Length: 342
Image (cartoon, rainbow, N blue to C red; front, side, top):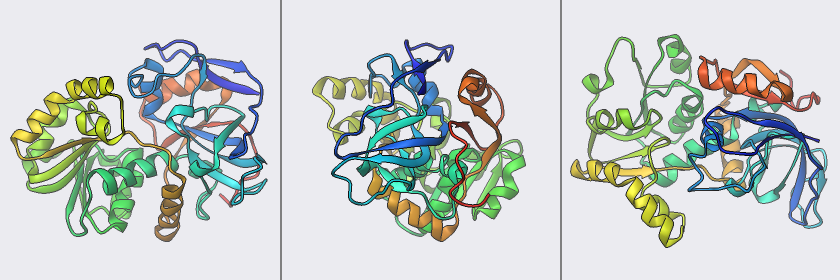
């Protein structure tokens, strides 16, 4: 089978398409024939080695974090899934590999594909949806009726996070591109700030929660609009001591993460604000809960019109990380009949 693999961490996004054996299935695993896999910002971080302190992979390894496909083989211990089931998943951090014709994964990390999604849209839902769900429910510990602000939230993350946050009872504010304003109003956002016309730090005050998608250069501005006692969770900035302790890392890694996140913790603490970092994990039970939410709210992520083949992976990576996209960018691995109508 074909697999997109990394032999060496690099900043040039250099990957290889290799022929490797179809993996064998253990008792608690399923073998998924991959239909589509999404390219996420996480791929850039993985290829460049920026997340190797969280997870350092033995090379060469197959890239890719989320996918849709059909189960083609099941282990002897599998009870809740059958051959032919349409599924989607965010693969576990320690065993990624969505960029391949086939992948094995423990069944506790997968969910049957939501009824309102097809193989294309489903490939863009699991990782981003779980990121939003875990940020909201585990890191922010949200309370209905309070205000969430997502600066730079008009990308693929916001497309999932806004309707999820609204379904959990939050007032949601987004800053982003003017061309996407109407789209986000349709998704239920309460306030949309055109970043070309308005500085959010001049407009907003006393928000309860922020999900940061922009990184360190926005940190001080983001802190300036949160109320005392509020919480900021970042998808981009450094992990910190809280992150390390919560995830049970070794003493050495806890020290390293404490040092990496010290400046963010210090700045936040000085303003009476909690700083958190989230690195989305695989969780089939949460994905099943999220699936019900996706169906109930009819949440459908946007897919870019450009869909790439395996052999076009270098072009795809360049497109995602160096150009403006219109939704998640997908790699197609199999032209199987879709789970639902387009």
